[in-house]
Length: 581
Picture (cartoon, rainbow, N blue to C red):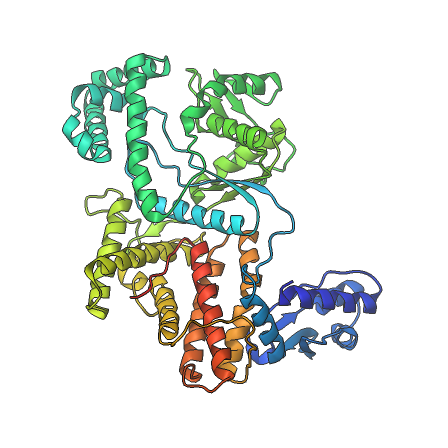
């Protein structure tokens, strides 16, 4: 049990003793260490409910609480309860953390099967900077959920079916350069699509030809199916290279096409059950009428008042839409994978779409804990959506290449004696890590400015700063005459800097489980930054190798634990650490 949970438990017992009934007693880390290590406003909340004096209730609670082996409790202000933890408690907890391969993080008490849908690029198109957020957020959340003991199923629901294939098929047959396709398939497929798309805008006959190719594909034409399959396979090969570079992996790649055979039956079922209605030839899902207009995703407010805002699941021409495919996807994930929770890591603009899909699924009888894990946009330094000079989306491979190039230049300036192959590997680790951390250190719901100089700085809130901290710690152990064994070391915490370092180290077990409450990896990123700052303050204030025993071993053990937590925490964010920088 974490220290925070232990305090909550003891506070709950004390409050129950005072008021005569069981009650929850939330405790949080103190915002200002001058007032203690943890604090609670439980007495103030209960006093309001019981119509009694909050400070008097807090006084009775402090008299009843057992703080033996932890520290002390005191009243602040109108009824806050502050908790001060003894250095000996921090020491014993950190010793246990050193001996624990999970570093003090307990597995979730209730194991869940969680399907995470993230990244999901379109076939025959390059991944662009907009894919950074979904891909990196989704991967980190999957790592954290797995570490907490959940069964996680990651699914890359790629866009491998749709109207764009009519243009690609026509272009494949007329303007494809096979030598370019073999050399680098994605740019060639993009060129083909853009040229045919441009021609179709200028010439209605070209558009009709493209539509005809799409109809043939949908009807199962063997030639078009073979071309489509090759397009998908070539695209997946290109995507796999990017994912390998990012160290991102998927359990499944069930794209839109996987569900084609399910769509007609799904629409029929919705009609039979009265969940779908025909409107102007299309099949639509309307409001159930069970929610108020303001909460109902199938109602929208216009000048004339609240009107219907249906989700179309089959167009009047018989075509299916994203809503249809997403409903089929939910059905499969619940029926085949027994999903307890389904998370969609998709941008904020899709909020209404998912509200409608989730509502329709529940009415259909497909129940799970549905979560739309939304996120904002990545902006250029001009604070506009990040684009190339020509106005195109910045390609993800270009972003990664430039990050690595800039990291290589910085490393060459800082450590010019690194062998070339090692320097290249370090540059890859640092550059990719910088891109990931720039994403994961942000509140996912906010837009953020993509700044090369800031994300690659060795000082500040960056991955290189954390990686450098880890490298600095490992360099201490390379100076030892023999490997250091932390087992059995008794921690002695006297200096305030080492007390504070231990205080933060044991909070790792409190921080990691809290991330999934609102799906916020930035909580872990911010914790690691705070831990690194505490380590540097400790390292400046407390000599390690020059100290006498037993202080020397105690401080080496603190260094070892800091190294393990930093490394493990970064791994949950999908970020590696080099041995040297």
